[in-house]
Length: 311
Image (tube, rainbow, N blue to C red; front, side, top):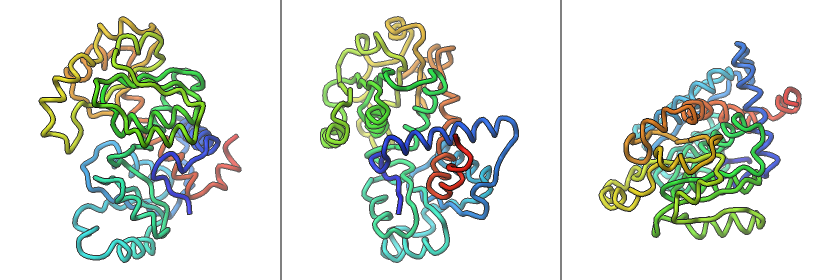
């Protein structure tokens, strides 16, 4: 059974197929065409963390594909009232797939263990594969071709950065993380990426101005993620030189695009004059969460439609 716990579950050609499907569905939607590809299919959203983009994009995307969705919060008692085995296998009797937004990555791994239905990682502490797919879809729209493009992430080597490093390797992009010492990506994760993609161009540097000198896209995220509130003061001090502002953008090429996975702390990791500038594609990027996930859902649940309808 196919799951998407990390992007390691996909081969590069699978990823390209999903992105092509996403663009095809987005183009059809723009002319009012909403084919019921997943009619009568049901998607469950099992969330341990609050959400705007992940929840709304999956629910709306599923509706546009002719299916339906169920939001499952704490009231279902996941991990509390009954064993993970019973919970997961019973849920598999009712729904066609599950999106899980979990505090810890092992929670989505536990769901997938029983192969009761496809499990999609909607965010964990380790990675955020759906976000990364939306991000490269945005770059594909901006530049036409992603191969050889340089994506620079300015900030914390967090779950988003780790997914971007992996997806860059898959699509033969360059990836640079500009961060202060002590905030690098997980070494085990990078080791897995290097093993799977030995020609990957991934580097970590401390100087953000040098990092963006030949950037095609500059990406940033909040300095303090959910669950890290106790570190807020220390993180603000460490990341202060890594703000994406006009000064930093002046060192980047004029064609550079700005990305942010949102929500943003405006005036902290990014300034208003950058996130609202003509170089910013942040709103389109947010919208592409839905389009990328529609492509993923169709790839997981009705691949035959892709074979017949996507060139």
